Length: 67
Figure 1: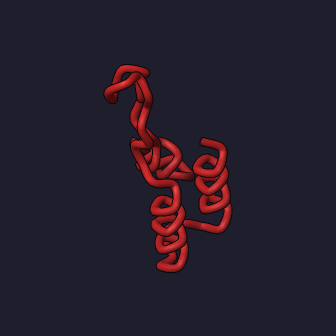
Figure 2 (figure 1 turned 60 degrees about the vertical axis):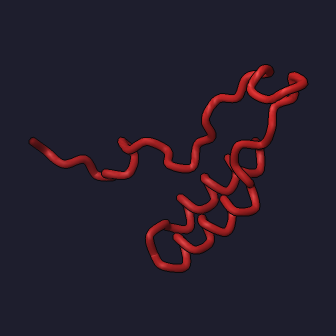
């Protein structure tokens, strides 16, 4: 089986948020499921440890900031 040039491209996005529905909390308000500040800290840590490239970091950071 041939290897792809970027094995990370086929993996699931581990920082993706699960879906929230309007009735997931009392009163019909959706609550924040994932703290974006913690996500950014985790991304920064992964980049500092060399587990994310600068490009991957910026892509994931953009996703967090847009959510």
